Length: 424
Image 1 (cartoon, one colour):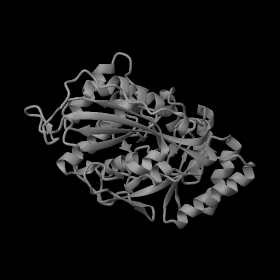
Image 2 (cartoon, rainbow, N blue to C red; image 1 turned 90 degrees about the vertical axis):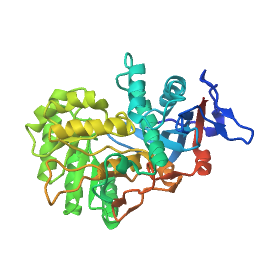
Image 3 (cartoon, rainbow, N blue to C red; image 1 turned 180 degrees about the horizontal axis):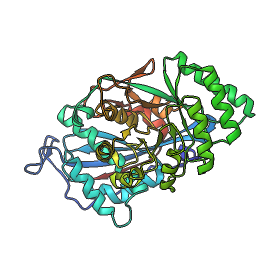
Image 4 (spheres, rainbow, N blue to C red; image 1 turned 60 degrees about the vertical axis):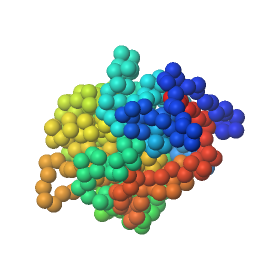
């Protein structure tokens, strides 16, 4: 997310000129005359929507603080009017430019059902200069929208398209306990109170933030475990520690029965993960900064990561997340997606988990957990007529076609910063 304050009313809404593709022909009654064999599945239009909401109370983690929520949504329309929605995790303005100026003109007229073909065409088009980074993030939103569109056209949910659901509901862990500007003693008390509230709401698992400073982190872990002795807990430092600090913190988390230690080290130092894992007794989880099966092959081959965490709105989309899961499975590593943003990404992660399984497999399994961000987010909570249903800390896997969630386009207008449209 970006930390910016801009007035929506001050920003223009831009419409990109149509590409050189041949326009669709309309008959006298207004219906679209499709080229032979197209059967209405060709991509007719690609829109992007940059949305922003100002936070009443800023919050932060080990790296910086937020005072706004931003997201970039991708809307893809087929010739028959079917629409798919996707989401990009990261810098909205940059994604919007990448999709509008580079990818969208290349995809108009393509068969929207051929998600893997389209993914590799995008990959090859930008391979020489964008094997990862923001271009891959832009591809992720497009790919998610195409999965949503394909599911609607075929009348199947995303998890059915991914091979079927093992489960109809997925337990969640509450992500929260972010830092706020207040004295540290008050902050710890506030974090414990917040965590206790999630227990009251029915959550049996939660994830705290660490990485503020070593002294605070230890005191926070001790206080929250004392207050919630039976809660499943994870800790996320957002790559705040060097290796000696991570080893010390790993011992603290292990002593207090934490389920995993997330992003303990910088993603730049892949070999350190194995050095850390050899020194601590709890699983290392990481990968939200990584992309593609190729990036994950490098990351996981070190042997220092037990839980892979691709974000479906960043790693390359659902298409690439499935390949990452196959790669991880071949190494005996489980995949638990990182999930930040709105209901689009939450729905994608829910379907992904519902269609997955726990390595190595047994009759009585410990279920994979869905990350459910509990920080204030109007872009997630106010813009969907049909959301992912979460009650008592458990998400129901959507059964509607595609992602199974429905955007309220009218409500969305209040949060629009800029929109673009590319037509065939």
